[in-house]
Length: 139
Ligand code: 5GP
Image 1 (spheres, rainbow, N blue to C red):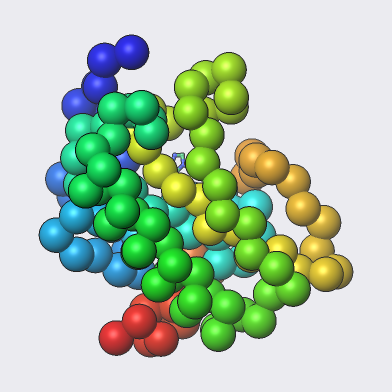
Image 2: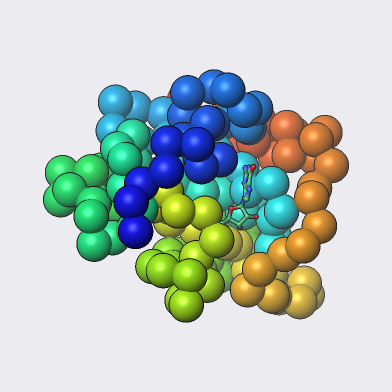
């Protein structure tokens, strides 16, 4: 599959679409998932035109892992989840729905039911305040 420059994450990278950013460096961007599976659900993407892990340059892959660890550490400190799922899907048959490579950071809370994908768009104010809490740890 060819990379589509008009996928939503490409637009978020170019700031043509809004997002709640929590961390950024020259290789990666981390922002809140618009339909969070749980409080703090964050996505980490490379600043490269990669559909999935198979066309992702190793330099960007290592940067994504480093940012993922950094953001997951912050999420752990802020929200004290019981566990954290770190995962990514490659290909439509594996459940991938946005075709710009991304890593999911999904905190798991003992009392909250877990579901692999959510369908409800979260309230803007909730996403903004969640992003703010994570960002405060990352500065
Ligand atoms: P995938 O199924 O490809 O692994 O995950 C795509 C993720 O992107 C889903 O969790 C979905 O909620 C999220 N998502 C889809 N569209 C948008 C969007 O416009 N903005 C943000 N922040 N997240 C999105």
